[in-house]
Amino acid sequence: MAAMVLEQQQVLAAARQRFAEGGALMDSVVSPPVLRSWERSRQAGVQPRQAPYYAPLAAGATRLDDPADRRLARCVREDMDHLWAAFGGRQWTLFCVNADGLVVAQREHGLADVPVLRPIQIGRRLREIDIGTTAPACSLAEDAPALVRGNEHYLDRFATVFCLSVPLHGLDGELRGALDITGTGERDAELLHGYFRQAALSAENRLMQDHRPCHLLAVQHDARWLHSPLQGLLAIEEDGHVRAANRVARRLFGLPRRGPLPVLTLDGLFAGASVHQRRRLLQTGPAHRVRLDEDTAVHVQYLRGPLAPHASRKLAAQPVNASLRAQNTQHVRDAVAAHQGNVSAAARQLGISRTTLYKLIRA
Image (cartoon, rainbow, N blue to C red):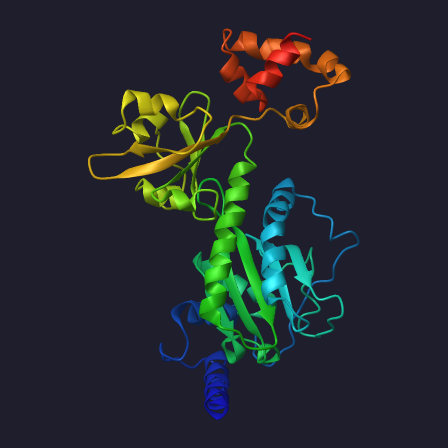
């Protein structure tokens, strides 16, 4: 087996060199996404025998300036910790790039000193025009999972590297980045892909939950998948319009896989439900079954209401003490007045319970 793998890698290296010199390449030598990456690398003037180029990191580069990058890093952190606990090691690094290839989060072994992995650091941009074909470059270009092994990389320097990546998407299904594991060894690619796909869905759910101005609903045909990476999520604006849906929800409701959603209301999305069921959609409580049409139904759970700016998060999280009452009573009364006395709606806007709201009003 080892001899067969070595022979395949030698064939790849020879084919890649001929390709770099302007020759044609049979489609069967590498997968179409890798071939397209080779073509982009050749067009950029990259040569297989050259050393990878990494632009020097500026002072303070590890501090992310873009709020969107900080949000992405925050939302992938927990899932990266779980992946690292399962698959991390001295010969491996786990990282997340944004849609431009900038590393925004990374995990590595504290005692690792692998030269080929050392340049992968937060604040560094990994581009095909500098280092040729890699899995994150393929994921970003193709918006699809990518696996690049050994001499499938365009540079000879990466002949020992295993690289697997999955894309990450934002509120409108747009490409936000990629999650990658890279190392000098061999892993079960099919197994890794399953775990990384789940991690990507989980991180995307956090990106949606971080969108504060909307109601958040969880939906699934199978109630056992609620509160898991496989739950569908819907972000609903105060006027009932559907602001966003994650990948799972888009599939459940037959919505476009990519791009902004069409103009759609919550009542229109659940047109097959009874009036009573639609009234319960934005009410707290356990998950309940809602019909979509005569043949299908989903389980729906209301997760939370719109959250005000960060002051409201503190309002919801802190105990109700005297100083907090004095500080926020007027804010709460203004919210109730804005909702024409509807206490439930005001509580949802503030991200607190009705009980807490009543206590603040009576302060």
